[in-house]
Image 1: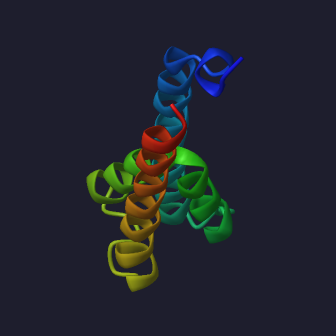
Image 2: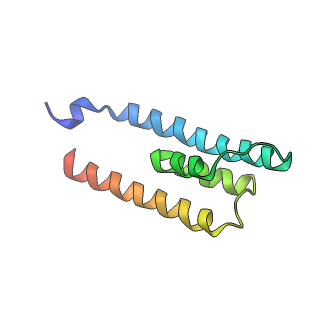
Image 3: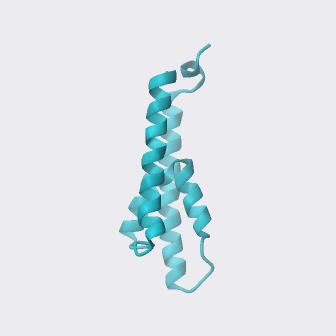
Length: 97
């Protein structure tokens, strides 16, 4: 049994759709809370969502909601993590599937 028999591509696609929606919603919720001076989502949580596959949703949320766009840590960090992640996914896909 090889890895492609264990991991079904459709489940990976479902996961990426869901985690990117969560990334977008996290940015939206944090923006709303910031405007109301309420408890915020920690920055580490936003980066964690990006690192586990939600980078595209987080980046879209960042620019659509105009949230964290003045922080270089986010403007550079989120795309860097996302690109690195997708390069790793492509590498694993090419070499193991």
